[in-house]
Amino acid sequence: MSSFDELLTFDVAALGEKIRSRQISPVEVTEAYLGRVEKTDTQLSAYITVTSERARAAAKAAQNEIAADGWRGPFHGIPIALKDLCYTRGILTTGGSKILAGFVPEFDCTVWARLEQAGAVLLGKLNLHEFASGATTTNPHFGTCRNPYNPERVPGGSSGGSAAAIVARSAAATIGTDTGGSIRIPAAFCGCIGMKPTWSRVSRYGVMPLADSLDHAGPITRSVRDAALMLQVIAGHDPNDPTSSGEPMPDFSSAIGRSLKGTRAGIIKQLLEGVSGEVASCFDAALSKLRDLGVALDEVSIPSIEQAAAIATTIMFAEAAEFHENWIRTRPQDYGFDVRRTLEAGMLTPAMYYVRAQRARAVVLAEALAALKNRIALIAPTAAIPAPRIDIFHPESALLRRADAFAGGRTPNPSGEPINLVTTVLRFTAPFNLTGQPALALPIGLSSEGLPLSMQIIGRPFDEVSVFQVAAGYEEAHGPLPRPKV
Image 1 (tube, rainbow, N blue to C red):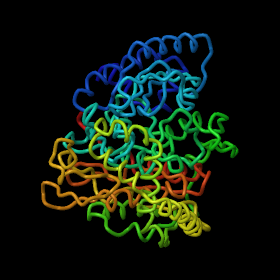
Image 2: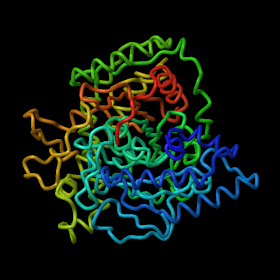
Image 3: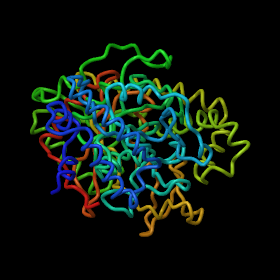
Image 4: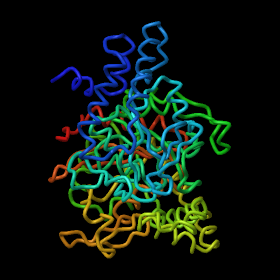
């Protein structure tokens, strides 16, 4: 193993300590990651823009500051990348769309501003499903992003590049966004950690919206501790975002390593149904591991969760159409087919349906909070299936073979089985965008074809600490997945 390859084996927590103690330098770490991007991205298309020279300059500045005893914290000198919905001053920011092919913002989003203040090094901007409006990252404008475990499979979406870069080790940590599962779905399909914080915990200032009342920004990382460390940097009230919460900021890592003995968690009954045999078996094994750790598990019911994906997509369609109204009227031909279809459906959504959907959110949240009574968290699979094949969703496929990730058309795959992304994926993730609860996806094993499988840990609003506690306890007991051969 070369020295550069060895640098890529450390998570942020370990890398930060080595940088702090000057065992390694930000410059050599950044060169290692830039080399990895060059080596892997022709195959994976995880990046839209690579900011090599900017990264080298920032790494040199970080190295000089640390040498002068100016270490700022665990992200100082750490190479990260951002989903290309995040505004970055002076850097191309496309939203994954031809619509914004030449857009260069004049200011930074708050998430990046806080990471840059913490000393992070920006490697570049990551591929995504166009305007975050899909679950595959099959992008007709900037290339189809591929799954590091199998390049014939989707990486999930819409933050597919964010998860692919983590697993391919072409970024040490990344930022994704989640409106119906777009952090957790890629984390599930690619085999890494995806943390959707409580709605309003992280500022969305300077992050292109899909649906304002459902959007979240959050970490996609290699380890649970890394997710907690990253959330520590990006969370907190922002006067530029009037929806950002003033809730006190805890130490998100404070319960990591704490025993789970004597805790209780609920298994969501409705989300045990409709999963593949391999997902069911792997999820049962994960539950057994939690029981071994001392967690008392019992089934809980959230009856309204059966309608939650439909409620979420109604809101998503309408709010996305409001943001895109001018472009969808004047430049419809510049959207990919599936995204244009979603936006057109939003333009036709009656106001009464939108109002009813918003009203229904309170019911889902009330039932979820009732299920959490006397429990540290809720547990569910993250998806009913492993990552599907890309050719089901390819933009050049016949229209009848396309899948609209949010409309949920039943699209045949090459084996003849229908895949419906609402029932197989969004059904598991979108409910917690409605409720705004924190939800973390983490890997629990591999399918018979070597594809990652995942479960979710869901907590009370603003109780990310407990979510991290449960997830880290399981992660330590289970160990990492075998690395893919990228």
